[in-house]
Image (cartoon, rainbow, N blue to C red; front, side):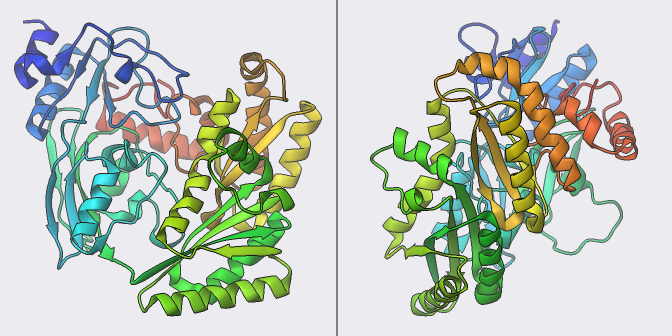
Length: 469
């Protein structure tokens, strides 16, 4: 029996796709990569995942695991060989259970992030992971890349929100690690090993995630700041004035907001025409709406007196707050409308971000006159989406083809000088694999290769992603 027939026997013939338009799985979200899979396999249970892995291991076929296919670094797209099995986990989308007393939810890897949020809210609880793709990305992919999003400043990345995993190993065995324990000091933390590994060490099939009480109040403000230095000062004031109530702190450059106003004129973009940067702040409070508003107003009054804020608006209701967040989340879409661009997902110590941007901005403008910088991101945790757009009126495809290596070298070398990371929340995939070799220490790379060799000795799980084959 050949591999395709074995796979059909494992998951059902209807869930093994080999013909027709498979672009939904074979092409990445940015439409920069298009591969060719031997087959798209859609298991519906952990037992079926294990059966698929065993069959592929016996045949020596590589497996590329995929969730919602919203990744940005080519980590879940098959190569062009036509020999790799694309395993889509989207059918594994059940919420297995909620333990309200333990404040945990156990879900399958193909569960869409928004489903977790809505399920928790119906129980009067909060699942705080939030990002622009939450309507289509899956929790397995979020964990595979250790996704961050807009509330990391308070709740942490996906890693901090996960208490347990169920994983199918490269040999097709199942590790049952779904206990919702907050304390378990019995050896190596296997959970943290698989989180952020981008499907190269094992296939996450389910997870137990932390929940939180719903806040009694949530307020959003939009502030104009005269510089990045002022934004960092405002962040310090927000930490002092709001404490644990500070749940979001986003920075947006003027040109990024200009693109939103240009391509989505139906959205009202506040204050952007009068300032080089705007900040979006969120304050969650467990006392009352009145207490939260008083805190916010006191913070903004102090910031205006200090000079780190020149103007500000506070959302009057939930609808206005959603509108402000919608503007922020529309920046990547507006940039895509403007044309092809070079994306960076970097992290820098917060205190050094202003100096980094001053230096990197100058180097890029010197190297490519007229280049346009789309700078925005999660300033509260030091993560910038420092993106580069072609000069206005230029050939954007040619810009991407001819300038991307030079731009990446300038940006990543500057990131290294400021003790940062070339990937904050998107992962490495294939897009940053070569750069990782330069910017990760040889000792770290050797340890990573040792782990990969130990857990996946035949290099069958997502080969060529993260580490060079």
